[in-house]
Image (cartoon, each protein chain N blue to C red):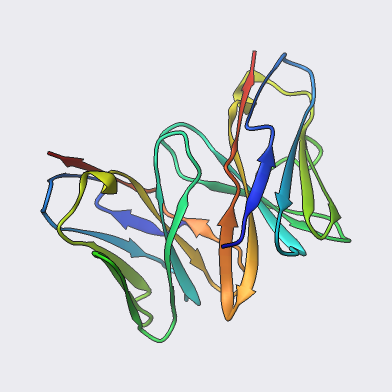
Length: 110
Length: 116
């Protein structure tokens, strides 16, 4: 089943923060986050494994709550380059097979 | 990092013809590859799992006779859209997972198919 992302769209000013959530009805082994620009393939951001870990990458970090089957992506001090559509992909059995959420469109304005 | 290529990057074909899209893992072997389809402003929808040496596994609702998948080697999978129709116009993306503790997914750049 497709994970559910929220919100569907976010508009920010440069320097503002955002949180994107991903919720699954199935038990998860891992959650993968990607950013996609228009007309391009998704670009990998990070993977989170079951066990409730958190990860950070520059000003982008994420958490994974295994019990709640939820993951959140945190974007701090947003930059214009952060604009795009963010997808979470979930893997239930460490097979590499990802089911993607519907996406969250993020627009960062000057 | 690992690289996955796709060819062609875009293709325009006439209704009723067939189109082949190639997906290659350039610096690692992939016994499994995945094919996704993405319509404008929509998510990536998994079409099928391509397995080297065995038949592909198709997701529910995907016609296996229309979307032929062949995993010819450990670095190459092909998707052939047979008897293409305008509704098949989409962005087709392949991915190859590489095991590094867990499976990291590497996406190809995608193929834009337009059927006229």
